[in-house]
Every structure is written in structure tokens, then in C-alpha cells.
Length: 126
Image (cartoon, rainbow, N blue to C red; front, side, top):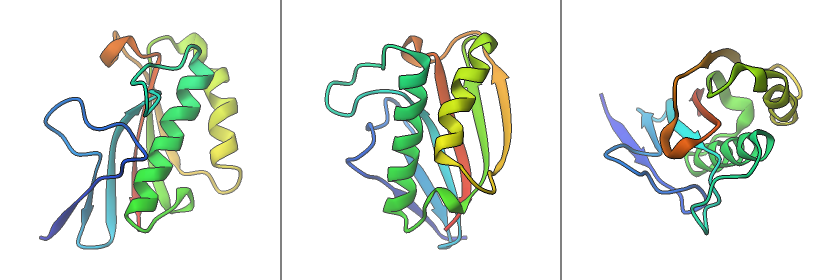
């Protein structure tokens, strides 16, 4: 079982002992949860919408680094600090998946790293 670690400068560097993404035998791709952080400043977006957009933009960059795209995403998991933000995140999410969206789970959690409002991860076939 061969795996390749995927890294791009177009997404925030990991803040712990994990990889941005792992590609399994040039087929299945696992993208770690992405926070809505500015890659240059390391600061979180000010709103949940801004954080969701940044999170999905980082996901897209990691997929692109492995030869994939948002169209190759099979499943996402959205972690929210407050389920009241569900519809706001949905609006942003729909911009990235306008047709044939992937399967998805959305979970409210007690807290996210760095006090983030949203974190999004995915599985894709690239």
C-alpha cells in the first residue's frame, strides 16, 4: 500500500503532526480538516462565511496539488462550532459544489482549533 504525502504552499501548513493530504496509490485522496485561515497572515477569517470560503479554497489547492479538483470529491465532513451557522456555510459550500455535490456529514462540535468557526475535510478520487 503506497501512499504519497501531498503538500502545497497554497494552503496553511499543518499546525501539528499531520499532513495536508495523503494520496493512496495514486487514486484515493484524504484531505485533512482545513480551517479558514489566511495563508499569509495565519489569521482566521472574521465571519463563518469567510472561514468556510478559505477552508474550501485550501481544500481545492491541496486537491489540485495531487492532480484532482473539487469535482473529484466523494465525501466531505463539515465541523461547525455552532449549528446555527449551517445555512451560512451551505451558501458558500454550494458555490464550490454547484453540480453533483459529494456526500456530506455536518457535525456541531464543542470547539475547533484556534477558535475556528468551521473546519472542512474530504475524501476524493484523483
